Image (cartoon, rainbow, N blue to C red; front, side):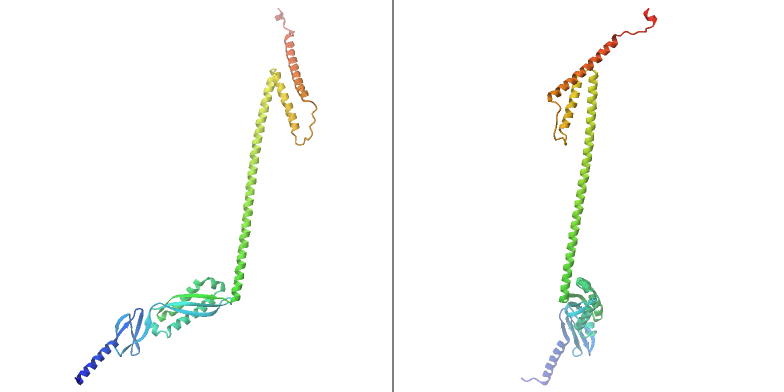
Length: 328
């Protein structure tokens, strides 16, 4: 069966309509934006999903990745403020926020971000000393991020993070820094050791001070108690002497014998226990001592007898010179 010319035309027209339809349907994947140009001029941006354009009039200009992307920053030499040469590299994280501006405001987006980051790394790190450079990475990252993000804002992108990965000084500088660090640690160790010795001496002196204070307080307490004991002893001696005196006045011979003998024995005891006495010569025997005591008792007895006789004689003598009235 042969097709007529009209049938062929209809089939061709149907195929053309299908082709035109599929040419006007654009499917945008998630995480991407497409820019649409009409006769070479930007018209709109297609979002993820199914979109329709006018075939043969509109076309896709750029396909932009809207997800956060990572850009490696290659190593480069940086001269610090104190003329130290170091090698530094890093990494940049960015995200496209406006597909139109990222497509038509800058040519070569990644190359522009890379050169902008490298330039600002040299500027920021070159304004710092080597010691600050090695110890303040967070500050360096923050400064570079702030400058690069402000510069890239007209391009419709957001610089989310910039991190310095490695900072490598020359080998001779690393060795010098190691020696400096070792010297600083030895210095701190010496200072700590000296501080420990000083604290130990202070504590030892404080201990000696407290010991002397306690010793002085002990001597003072001992002297006070010795004085009190001597006072008590003196009081007891005075009382004993008073009692002996009263006994003597009452005619008690045994009391004076005991008193004299006690003093005599104490005198010999003090002589025998003297520190400087190495040789003790006694002028009498022990029996002589007893005899002396007995003799002292006899002397006291005679003294008391004489006193009694004197009293009796005085009482027996008659008084003279009485008045005449009394004789009568």
